[in-house]
Length: 440
Image (tube, rainbow, N blue to C red; front, side):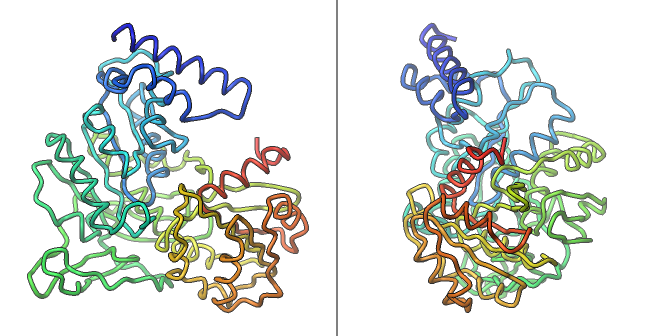
């Protein structure tokens, strides 16, 4: 490593130390400072690692966490950006305090789709994991085709890297790439109350796709009667869904039973992606099962927070498909509950709020919801969407400011609370609960 790289690395490490010691931490600032000193630092930091890049619209953070747990069963020296800081400065931060590398060093990195072009040449990944692509922050990305172009442009820069992709997504089989490819998906029907099936078009000819079976959105065993386009052969499969509960799921992967302490079909996909990487790296199935059983909740992703006498289940949401999957999870709730919906539209959330019109809040109207609390800088939009869905305005407490939201939660009529929050709203409510001592 060059002198300037060493100076940059040490500056980042010192920044990380002071942030950790005197604040609640900061995952991107150390990398930002280090890069300001040496713009080529990432290449030097990553050169002794086998890098796994996990990218896509939804599920990156949990897939990264699960993959790290799985590969930790075989490898001792693993680093990851576990806080979800997935742009270049956050990725640099993951390397800053890493131990001295050995021949078995692995970096498992969640990377924002838009940041791939800024890091892939320096990281030189061994594996790309493509989770999915759904309409997300269209003011930033445009169409799903545009997002996919970001993924395949990155893959083309490293043609020897293996792509492990969600085979149930029609786009992911639509380009012939030099990269070796493996696919995962569901090889079974799924019984659910999901109403979010999309009318998907064939990426080759534009004809409406048919499905032998379907999971959600446009995912499933698709085929085109017009041009013959169809789902690729799956290398790693969900062969049975055995139990869906509000706290966990039990399912079979390649006919072997697994339990994940994160609920929902969408999280079974995340587990399947991590399983696929584990099998690619020859991790035994017994070790993968252990990793899934040890998995902790990722903050903001079905995170359980005990505050006052309440049990809050917090889920970050950011686009129609992801939100609808969380709503399907909430529909499994058997107890009366309070619904908290916090909506921000800062750039990190997506400024355009039209996506709320494409969600299925109507599906919650028959549930035993005793109270609804709304908040965030777009509280009026959130409240109106719920009224449009069929909820009585008189049952909605538009708390708006965080102190009012916290007070409303304290006086909620149920002990069970389901909280939905966009990304920055999730960070803000967590900080408020940390400041009050409810999260350590």
